[in-house]
Length: 246
Image 1 (tube, rainbow, N blue to C red):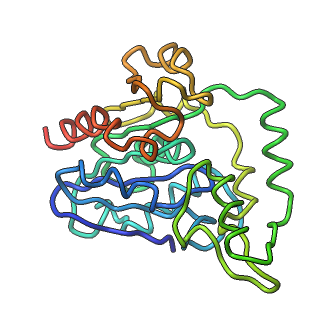
Image 2: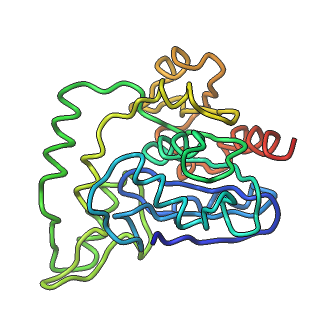
């Protein structure tokens, strides 16, 4: 079962982090959402257990189970909006297919990498095959976890193991592969908002706008806009709120 942190009251926003991060990276942004929120630690991340294998479908299924599934998104909550960053954005789009029993009425992807080279995929596969690095101190492990995630993490980003500390991230998650974003957009059963930071090297604005002319470019931020300047994702949250509450 995945770990889910919750807060607020009203229409529910489900928040999915990127590879290596945890649900805690949304803490600066949740105050801008007028309703309830649920920040998930994806399998193999933070306080959630590792998975036997990683695919976008299996991650979406785990999120659906953690939210209560059974067609409600969260027990008694009704329709939901889902916003994911990077890897989490692909999982959000996967949930919007309607294949996992979550009633998604609006979906957003922030900084989703749209173009992959063979070299990038080979590097990811190599990282997935490596064992976790164990460090003698928590601080060293936390620094490594932050490097993997691209952002500082809270205590949930590391775990104590025999011989020291390591990042909570299961390295096998690097093997999830390249997403079929075009296919996911085609089958999405909810309005889609894709956004990227003006300076995001993983999802340059040109790539985003070529795929989605209605994509949102967030000025002055990079790949982790929700951490760098949480208020910058306000336009994305506003569009999700409008679609969810229409």
